[in-house]
Amino acid sequence: MVAPGNPLGILSLRDLCRRDVRFANRTRGTGTRVVMEELLAAQKIPASALAELERTEPSHRAAAEAVASGSADVAFGIEAAARARGLDFVPLSRELYFLVTLQQALDQPQVQTLLALLRSEARRAQLNALPGYAAENSGEVLSLRRVLPWWNYRKPKRRRA
Image (cartoon, rainbow, N blue to C red; front, top):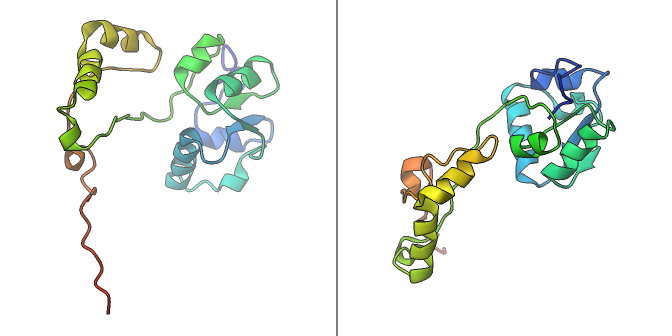
């Protein structure tokens, strides 16, 4: 998230290392912070290189407010929060979200009601109207092995010696 017009020309994570950039980070342990740290690691940028790394905001809305108020130049968060505060947005990553349940729960009435809602055109239209969101697979039941090939739910039990 950056100020309207992106006056500092922020285009990548490397730009957050500049000393003229005031960065509002997300709180340690948030999904957004985890994604940012993974992106930094993939680009071999040490977290210590970021300006004001220890300044944290507890939510997407708070991060957007820090930029909108001028107390930060850039914050890492979602496009919907940026647009809600009239900010510009520089996409750095695309995340997929999954709602997970056990296969045997799929036939429960509550789960069926939720799936019907997620599959409805009205709900898809609502999601697609949010900046940065796409409901392309909303309500589709997938195998974890299909979307997370490394996933292994069943792990062999350790034998005691």
